[in-house]
Length: 314
Length: 274
Image (cartoon, rainbow over all chains, first blue to last red; front, top):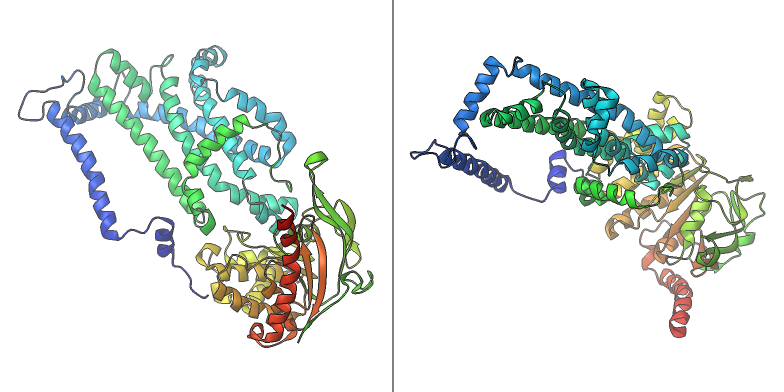
């Protein structure tokens, strides 16, 4: 009755029990996958003792890609340095993402807390959600001009509803018991919101944010399709026109690194802030599948009548 | 040591009652979908009573607790605490849940200090009060741990400490030990008995375990389902006993059998009908 679990024990209790040795073996297997891919790439593109099986025009060898990367670093691309291209793309991405979070999260929280607010905002958001946002790009160009604004808006268009709705669902799935416990301890409505509903929703909010990252990177490519002459995705698209496959691959790899890096960054922030997430014994499996279940629940939310109130006590 | 029938409606006058339940019924839903969770009932709980409500699932015992806590409103009748009508949750009625009601993002100390903070004490005072209760339930050295770092039994003790720190008039306990293993539960039941002896709190305890009710209670209300209603009530001596092994005595077993027969009857009748 007096046993206390140490943090490390807890981690292994949440994940399937594996010995360090087995986990090391798994690492090697993963490493092997990448090594095999890279070797195949190298051997088929001219780095082997035989002639390239795939022409550099279609797939340049890893060495050529690395070389292209250093050339781009040195000479830039079409009058701008590589850093400027990456910078402008990151700027478009960050501004869109920043506003989606600082507006989308509060809007989602309010939709989760207040049924009237939900009745007003959820139907239009749900109605916009299935519209392919890339199709709106021409419209955004007319409305917001060919500057950065139209790009930022096309990135924000799919991210905003996702973040708002995941925040709303995070609020709705806060355990009613916890709210009742706080109320019977004398908490006011505001205290219940700020100290119970908000922290309890954080894991769900983070899941929405992390799901949005890959979507936002995808939209970045769409945004830089036309009406710009800078940005990392534009660089890939333009290089493709000149059949400079090595530059295309460098740009694609940079975007992959950006997407992966941002996901890791938010994951780090998440584990710092919501350290309890996934550790409530009864909720372990549920939370482990959070990413997939959120996607499913968002899909379900679109089908369910919008005015139902799940937490009676809010 | 024995149990004897008593009239739970007239245990005392409504004026003396700590918690009084007058003609309270609850119907969920409306029209043809409505379910009568509770048919009108009266129940008086006097200060210092340890009242256990025992019954199978669907007998309305949790409904009754939710009404007393103010989480839900009765369809008819009124519930009063110290003569004041209950209309919403309040700090004078501490609630302990089955499990999963601790605030996972707060340390044990912050969980327990939540009540005094919410009722207007300063942070320092709230801390002090929380440490006092934690010491009382023997968890002071775990003050800085988070709930997920504790075993199930310790989590429930935190839940009890949290409810106690507000010094509530009545403690409402909704099967707090139902999810624990047998050994842990027995240890905690003994602790609850001592806690009640020390604090003299009025406790309304919901359980489906006849043994738990006999072990703890001074008064036992037996409820039966479909629709939820009181089918018998007993005054009990076993809760006052200091003997941790009281449940092994023949008197205890006889009392257990008496209540068991009561609870068995309706379902047997039902089985015969169908």
